[in-house]
Image (cartoon, rainbow, N blue to C red; front, side, top):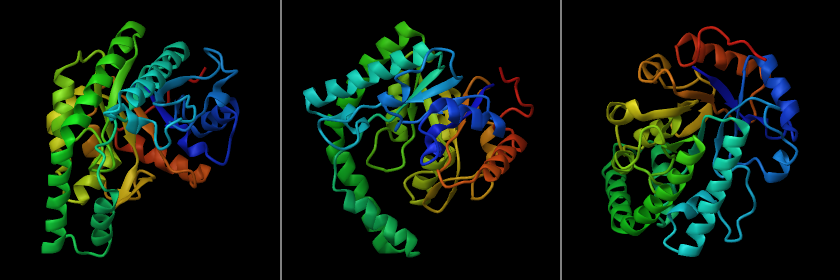
Length: 307
């Protein structure tokens, strides 16, 4: 049972990953997840064995997209040129993970393009305490219908991208985890994830359980959190651990509404576990979050030996 902290926390602190690793070791973390914003320049002189890397988050090590916008959205693009470019970034990510000895790559599988203001309006009504109102339900139903209408060609593109990436992952011996997403327009929803997992070898493709993302969409009324655990917990490859209050995620475990002891009961022993915490937390706060994750069984009760 391994665990790490995402380099997401290191924003505004460290440009050098070796210095970051020294700092997180002192906090009790034995390894690192390379977050999606780490660039090619930041890993240019990194050699295998320099630092313990548990997992890599696609598209790291990232290069700027010639198409604008998030790279991961392009994995579901119906535009073949854009999709192939995004797959090429994924192949580079997988090769980097294999070279560095990482166990898994976490992937965002793309987006169903639809007017983003619809979800924004729903979130604002949620924050305005209208979640039980008829107008809220009407808007949520409109979002569900709009996504369903647009979904087929984006889902098929995402499916094709995954097929291509899974082939390389199999050759390299690196597992892919498909992450549960923060926005309803993103891929995969639970029913889409079930389809994708059925199509792939469990030793190659699994579920990357982002506990905060699942809870945010549950709070908005799109699904029940427990449904994900019941349906796909047995396929969990990795987990992003962070807490949630309403729509605010990436909080320290123990500060919000999630029951981490309940979550821990569903995590396979081999699942890689990453605290994915926001950048503004101080080191002592990280120690407290780590202690809560350990006390609830989400990470090992005893610290492993650190080389």
